[in-house]
Length: 80
Image (cartoon, rainbow, N blue to C red; front, side, top):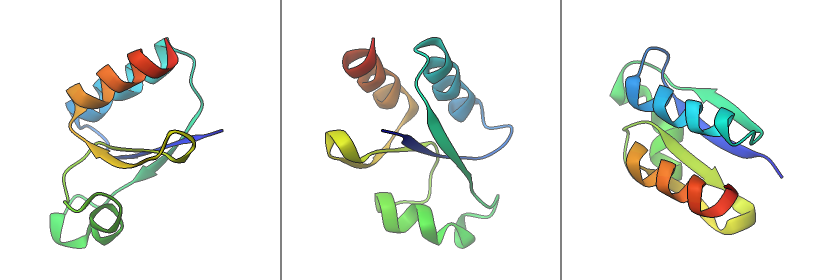
């Protein structure tokens, strides 16, 4: 089981999610997205929007969760 995280280097919201993943010792694959929203087609296909971070957890039916606070809450509920 591996989670996927769509993130942008230097993004504080992405860093918050990565910190939580590391705290919980959860393995994940990071997909670095382009800095330009107009080029973030992969993120948009997954989540319906171009903001990051976006979490994919297929094992639990999560196919593109946006919003860092929601992701952190989800990770705590699911993996803590």
